[in-house]
Each structure stands twice: as C-alpha cells, then as structure tokens.
Image (cartoon, rainbow, N blue to C red; front, top):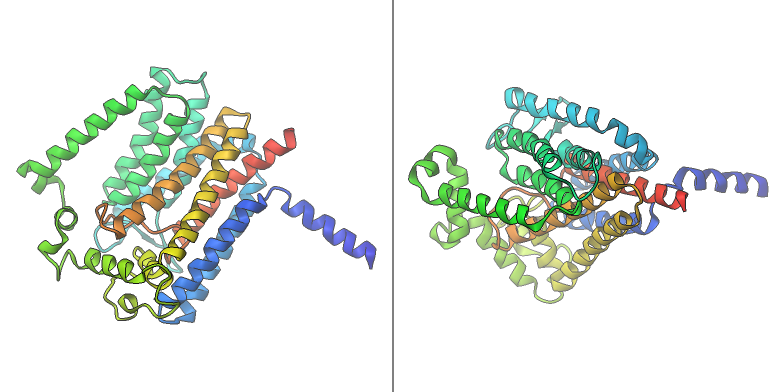
Length: 375
C-alpha cells in the first residue's frame, strides 16, 4: 500500500510540478466567487453555473498544458502562433455575427471570439520582436513592434469591437514599456491619440462618418447618463444604484434587488460586478480586488525573476494586461469610463475570455517553472 501511495504521490508531483500553487489558489478563489455570484445573478440557474464551471475546467486544462511548455519552445513557435491567430480575425469580418458588428464565429457547438486569441498571441509576438535585439529597443525594433501591434488592433476595430481592440493594444504597449522604451515615445503617442480622439468627438464629419450610432450613444451617455435615463443611460444609472445600495457588507447573497428585478441589464456578463457589490458590499469588492492584485503581483514577480528577455516581457505584459481588464470593467460599471463591453475576468459569464485568460496564466506559470529549474 505504501508503495502504491508513494507512486501516486510521485506521479502527482510530476504532473503538477510546473503549476504555481499560490497563483492557482488565487485563481480558484476568483472562480469560486464568480460561480457563487453567477448563481445569484442568474436567479439560481444551475445550468448557467454548470456551463461556466465546465468552461473553467477547460481553461484550467489549457493552463496546465501550457504550463508544461518550456518558454524556449514557446518562443520558437511565436511567429506561427501569431500568424495563425490573425486568420480568424480576417474570417470574422466575412462570416462573423454579433449584435453590434461581427465579433463572433458560430462553430455550431459554441460561439468563438477570435479577438480573445490575440490577448495571448499579441503579447507573445511583441515580446518576441523586442527580444530579438538588445534592450532598451532602438527605433527599428520599436517600429516593427508597433506594426505587430497595429495589425490585429486594426482588424478588431473593423469588427467593430473597440473594447477588445483597446485591451489587445494595451497588452502590446506594456511589452514596449517593460522593454525600457523611453517615456518620450509614450508621451508622443498619447498626445497623438488624444488629438485624434478629440477630433473624433468634436468634429461633426468625423462623428457621423467613423462612429456608429451605438458608439455615439455610449460617448454621450458617459458625458451625462441622465440625458437619457430610460434609454442609453439606463445601464450606468442602475449600476450605480446597485453599487451604492450594497453599502459596507452588502444585502446578502441572493438578496440583490437590482439584478433580480432585472434593473441592471447584462448582469451575468459585463455588469456582474454590480451584483457582487450589491450583495457583498465593500467587503466583497475589496476581497476580489485583493485577489486580482495578488494575481497581477505574482505575474510581475515571476517576470522580474525571469532570466530570458522574451520570458520577462511576456510574463509582465500578461500580468499588466489583466490589470487593465479589471480597471476598465470597474470603471465602466461605475461610470468612470464609457461602456465598452469588457467582461470582468473570471467573474463574467463567458467561455472564450475565461479560457484565453487562463491560457495566458499557464504561460506565466511555465516561465516561473523554467526559472525555478535553472536555479
């Protein structure tokens, strides 16, 4: 019996040696909270919870597989992964479907969102491009990395999916930042983006030519939700009410009125954080934000400990990208940012986003395991 137990223990140790247990524990806690909030937001719909749980299992499986891929092998495969990820972005423009554009591809069994692939493959390619030359990068490397970032970002904007495009863009920009790019590049880029955004917002020709009606509504609603309280401003107004009514310790699990009475639309997806805030209050929000902070900090620690420039840039970019996802969704539901349709990681209902996030964290774990093996 002891021999069998020892053999099973050794097998388990070999199969899980690449997993980062502190990081995995935080992720499991977030997923557990996500399922609990989803159960309440979905009015105790067990099928909804089981469906999301199955997606988490798939994501954890992908995470485990990628955690066993050595960073050197991942680096060699990066250009192919990037090129293959571009193909669905092209295909979705012709065969895609969605309520406000072509964001999804119907595969029969499930809907697939091609933009999610780029949340992993773009940081990989940006890190690969920058790591080919000494750091900090020179003008040639920077321009090549910008082209690598701009191509998928432009294709996602054509869908149009502004929220995903900005998240993908951010993941590439973080690689440039971590590579040691001078602040002057970011200041110049920020000034250019601000000028373009101002022109788009205030020039009548640009407003009607480049912004779709729902995008115009989002901008106007962000400026003044009370301008159309029963229409475009409804989501934000009700979201703020739900967040405020939670108080310090919340109304209690399953006792939120805003979501259960359907005042907050999309309360199982983009606005699920409002359900958490209403039912668990400031305490619940603080716990979840601390878990996110731990996951992001763990990714940055692994990046700082990595010896290879490619691995360091990739792990850091993936960690900081998660930071942006949380900030954008949190700002969106609280009215601090325009509504752009960005889900809250591991809380919002959805399969592609959860799997892509866990896949990226699997890569981070692989980088951490490789670092430990070399010491």
